[in-house]
Length: 274
Image 1 (cartoon, one colour):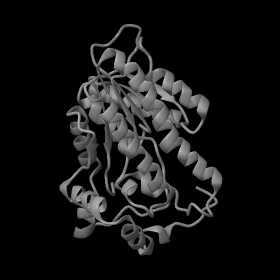
Image 2: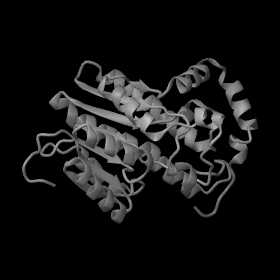
Image 3: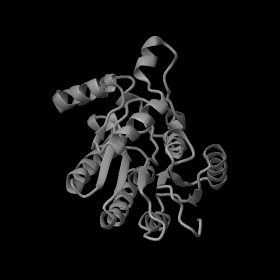
């Protein structure tokens, strides 16, 4: 950490070494932000930081942390809430999926999912807004998912539903304060996420290219919405249409259809190893 303050704003990104998190870090650096990058893998964090410094000439602080560990999460929360070296933008991106059902999956896996996708978002969002409100400025971006609108997407959908509702509630409470909260609800995005979760990431057909999103399109659209102060960001018109349909179709119908789809609940099964 630099001893003298930088003239640039600072953004903290969780899950910053891969997928959406790495893309958020690069886009924010390109937009003139210094960075605090958070992830579990120290070597990968250091490589990410070195690349960002070389490519964009910004300051990058490395903060290794497993957000499912409460002591580690508290360290990240302390950094987010720092008044000496303030964080201007928080991106809660860290997450993972489970290719297993909730009812007979590994309880420890589901507890870790809750800690990373829900508890960490709550703790860091609270720490960020607590520090931002006295300054009268700051932004929080929480990564949700269209899956959070689907009753039938397993524990992942339930966790993302929490993120969506929490962020929309924060946005209402923060209105008029100079601090804002935005939740991004992407559809399928081509990242390492699906491979790590044991799922496919789409093919190369014309249909697949329309369904699956380019990572930079998601990141750029959601950051534009974040800085415009919009509480909800659904990148691309096609996924906005899907989101609108999911909002109006009865939930029992969505659940029934999703649970019968080969790409939906049927593909999840207990996995002893990840």
